[in-house]
Image 1 (cartoon, helix red, strand yellow):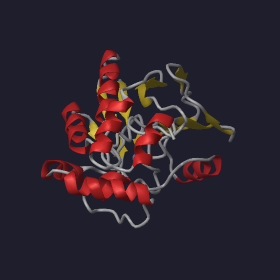
Image 2 (tube, rainbow, N blue to C red):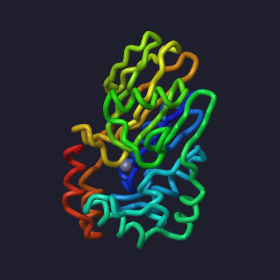
Image 3 (cartoon, rainbow, N blue to C red):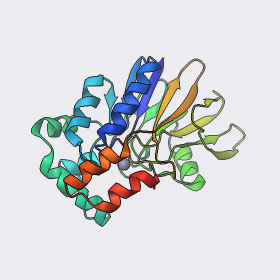
Image 4 (cartoon, protein in one colour):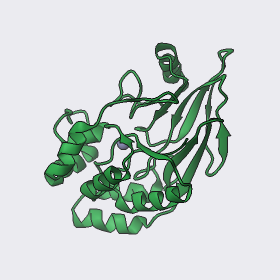
Amino acid sequence: MRYAILSDVHGNLEALETVLADAGRHRPDAFLCLGDTVGYGPNPNECASRIRELGGRTIAGNHDRAAVGALDISAFSPLARAAIEWTIEVVTDETRRWIMTLPDRLEDPDFLAVHGSPRDPIEEYILDLPTSLAIFSEHPFSLCLVGHSHVPGAFVLKADGTLSARALPDGKRMRLASSDRHIVNVGSVGQPRDGDPRASYLILETEPLTATLHRLSYPIATTQEKMAAHNLPAQLSQRLALGR
Ligand code: ZN
């Protein structure tokens, strides 16, 4: 199987269309979306429609839940809250109904997929080795696919107990040894935060198991113009160009 795996589209239609065009060239057998299709960006309904049309499996993220009133936004940063309040106003009934159907995890013979982490699928960030070790210890997956932090990369736990964090360089196929356990973060389509503003998505192939991250430039200025037109916070617009 070859999967194209997207996460954290965040209402950024220009980034999503760019990723889908590229992913199509890899002829994936299936698409997976790891949540936060909406929130921050100017096209939540259009992005939800495009993701739905792919017919792949999709899970819910914290912004998706917040956009339908199913998550308390008092812990959101002021910028995130400003954007989600706008999103709550503009989501259509169709988008809302679809979000309400999204599960918080996918279990597959090849992987476990969650937005945040297996022990808190909606909200926990896996950003460091101690957190990844706790999650490896508490949950018996061999491969866990995540998004949420908008920072692509992998945590690898070897059978001898050695734990490491690995970068996923653009376009480089990384073999995931079956004797190792992995947490793989696919990065963000619509709002990367690893210092690289290019949209991120992952191609995962099974037998043998490999992961290839892809980074793509997209017309950021177009997204920024739409954000300005909707009076979304300027800092959210500027960060797209910084990848922060
Ligand atoms: Zn997100």
